[in-house]
Image (cartoon, rainbow, N blue to C red):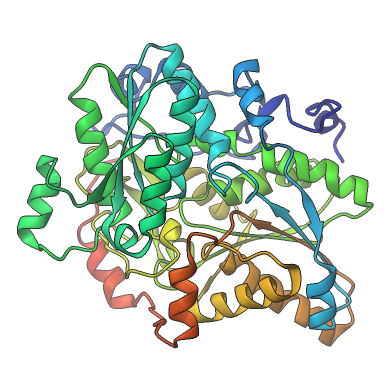
Length: 454
């Protein structure tokens, strides 16, 4: 392990700094562009949406950013999270592989999302902001931000994708329990939401639509700011507490991963686990394959195009270069709502283009089958999102069974499925449909990408 990474944790094994991978990459990522001028944006362009502390983290070239004591104090409610060896799953598969999973379901929200929700709420409260607006897919990000906002005495207003709002009523109740106000998206409380509903009253929504609604409200109120649960550089950086802990825990276990597998939607969970290991790979101290797994119905890395696009459907956000299915793409209403985003984090897209990670897509029924097998062996019901990584993990372990290789596999269990049982119920009833993204849809989306003269 590279020497620098050994000093990021103190005696209670919780990181004291976040890791910023940008300075370690062999080439810098392309800059975000202003949606009107198509010129690289500066800090002032982002000031209506984010406090300056977060803007500076977004563009930071510092390899390590100290975690404020006020943030770390909240982290200590659940961090460090456990790293488990999946002995029972290994035995059920009959594999010589050693499978480890980093379990983020012990957080107040039941997922990895508070790792960034807490610092975002802290920096906004520090700047005097009184309300945060946001979107949420499966509801885990909305739950995390509601919890985090409550820690610092600010309000939280959330637009939840309609498909998930209808599928997961207890997610809404959990957000409200933490003090959040929740709207189904598209909603009738924003101009853009009303426009979408007028065009299609049955619109199932998308993260892109919900982002536009949340940004619209934040931009109109000087006491409000917008918070994003994935995609942006500072969000991915906050999540690296996962990988920093996992590095230490794997060393304590006496193993080094050969394969690291994470589910990807916007990319924060995947980045959080893998970026510290990618640092070590770039430093030459280990050489794992790092694999991103996404839904076949929303396959941004494996079928999307690498181009500048809007992060939201309404075209209000900066243009970022990312793997995208088109900003107006509305994914099929799969149960892994947290992975239904039209684009991949620009930083992960850039790293994929550099050839530093691999990617694959999975159908939802095979993912739920892996989730059920994991639950019956390891005693944890996974959220629908990490079942994608589990499906790939199971297949990798079975390949080891065929070849006799004793690979070490590390995966991220980004959250539990305790509030997703309707999805499992649909799986057991045989009602889940395997949606796939077609080449025809991609060709159509390409015609609507922003036309830039660069």
